[in-house]
Amino acid sequence: MPKYVIERDLPGAGKLTPEQLKAVSQTSCGVLSELGPSIQWVHSYVTGDKIFCIYISPNEALIREHAQKGGFPATAVHEISAIIDPATAE
Image (tube, rainbow, N blue to C red; front, side, top):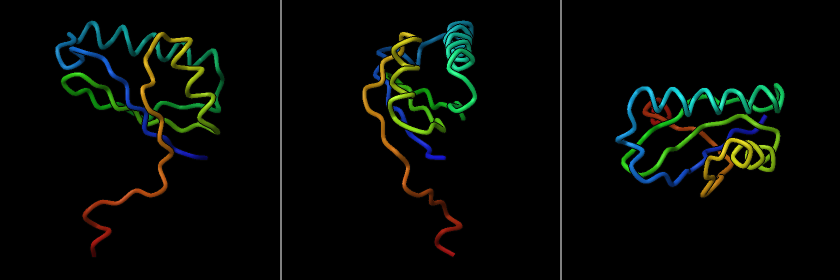
């Protein structure tokens, strides 16, 4: 199943409190539950003004539906074609 990186513009994301991050996570999980098991949230990286999320989904349309239903911006959605790390150089 394809994996995607979702870029979300969210000014001040890096200043969200643990309670606010928990609330955002709970909203996301609720929408995922509604959409069914074909879409999965792997994890997210929170930066100053953006959140980058890794998702497994059969298609980009389902990711965008999740964003719309959850009220999360999906500024850009990119399908991952490969994953590399230091072990790739060996």
